[in-house]
Amino acid sequence: MMRCYGLVLLAALAGCASAPEVHYYRLSDETMATPQAGAVEGNIQLSIRLPDYLNDRNIVYQSDDVTITAARQNLWAEPPEQAIGRRLSAELGQLQPHYGWSTPLSGGGPRDPMLEVVFDQFNGRFNGRAVLSGHWLLHDGRPVTPSRHPFRIEARQQGNGYPALVRALNQGLVELAGQIARQLPPPSFKPA
Image 1: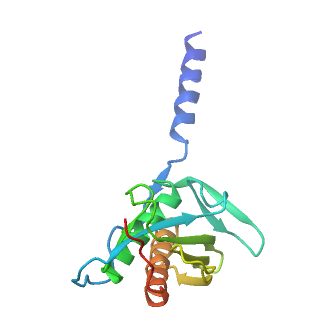
Image 2 (image 1 turned 45 degrees about the vertical axis):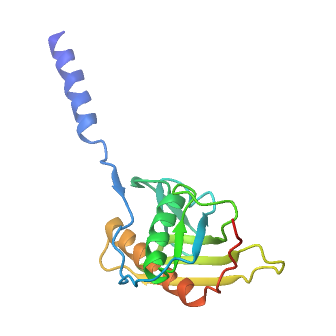
């Protein structure tokens, strides 16, 4: 009888020892640009939209031309829409310091212009690149339909594995912020 208990205990310990370890990843807080001094003209809210399969805690990887894989042990430490918004607003704040940048979590007024960034892809690919694609629009209350600005960025992974993928996605966001900063038309701010 003692021998059975010993085998059951040994099997239970072996099962615990072989459970895969879960890793959590976060986009960097470091900005690449140097801040410029100046007066703030107004606040711009930043809205991020991702398709459901990307707005999940699992990091997504495209393993061939048609297969999408969601990692099970490699997860985002915070919701992707929140992480991308935090990262882009920090970078845009450095590149366009004459505007205040806010996300839904950091606040902003209902009359503030909104920069909407819609992602179709925010994932790794089998070719060793991180892909960011989609479009952005500036909604500032003007009677004309806002111009749609498509983007597609491929950042090469420096190394293998999920840490390299997250760093490449972060680099892609830095590039996207630069594109937006160069193309962003002056928004129309409404008086409060």
